[in-house]
Amino acid sequence: MTQVVHVPLEDRAYDIHIGRGLMGQAGALIEPVLQRAKVAIVTDNNVAPLHLHRLKEALQSAGIAHAALILPAGEATKSWTHLSQTIDFFLNEKIERRDVVIALGGGVIGDLVGFAAAILRRGVRFVQIPTSLLAQVDSSVGGKTGINAAQGKNLIGAFHQPSLVLADIDVLDTLTPRDFLAGYGEVVKYGLLGNAPFFAWLEKNGPALIAGDPAARSEAVRVSCQMKADIVVRDETEQGDRALLNLGHTFCHALEAATGYSDRLLHGEGVAIGCALAFETSARLGLCSQEAPSRVRAHLKAMGMKTDISDIDAAMPEPEDLFSLMGQDKKVVAGQLNFIMARDIGQAFVTADVSEAVILSVLEASMDPRSA
Ligand code: GLY
Image (cartoon, rainbow, N blue to C red; front, side):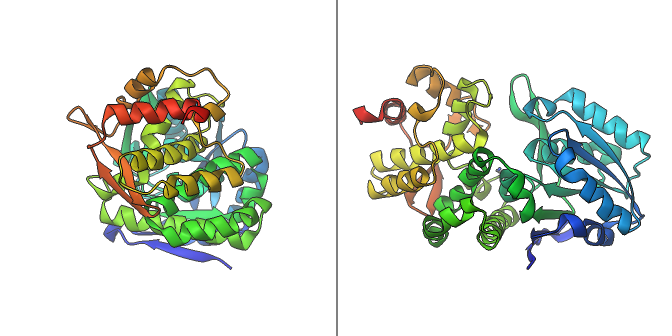
């Protein structure tokens, strides 16, 4: 059964459809948002052989003309070069101001195509068809789009909401277990930041999610999207509450920078470690009991996930150097680094009041957990 999460953003409102077999129904689902029966699709060379033919067939059977651009897979595609290639493709395909373009892929394709859509002819509409768990529960929803700069990730971009999101649960079957678990890091984040019953549900249903149970997967994606939608509606451009979605991300960005944004640490793996460290920091600051970080770690470990810096298979810089990498974070305001801390599972909040000494002690212990 398909579930729909509505994102009520006034004239930018849209639906997120979550369920099985949506790729095969894409033509019929997309048709209502079109003003003429023509779209342009952008995907990557990992996703194209798996899913592009089914999307094309679905568009064909709904009588929607389409052309596709296949870009190289990987983070390096979020670049000026591929943005310009994407814009050229849309212009050559004569995509007009009222037309719709489609992002078929994970977070990289979604962010790049969303940004291209934001700037093409001062903004065309776009549909997200996310093919990774991470994209289904996070990056395809909420309108953050962009590319990377030499100075850092996601530094060039725009808020541009999609017109429709199709999260087909069946495509998750094509993910490697490692990629699925990396996306699961973002799912756990929602429970930790604001929904303790959902975290308890994940503790119980995590094994079914890994085993591929479609009903459990659908429910996890639905709750995650609903939580993200609620936060985005309260704070679309991250003036306040939306920062809660960055739980674990300040630690994560430092760890990603230290590992050269390579596959030694996937983003969602860094988020999981970051969440464990954020709860550990909260406990050391006396904000929550030690039971909370222990429970976070126990669940992540039970799912076979990394929970500590020592679990990353790479040489790491000293804690002081990791701390200064945290200072490069986009969430620095007037030179002040903000942290997402927690009073308990499901009770996160934003604060600048975290001492460097406590962070250093948490980083040190996580590099050698036996010393903690
Ligand atoms: N991924 C965090 C956000 O969309 O705000």
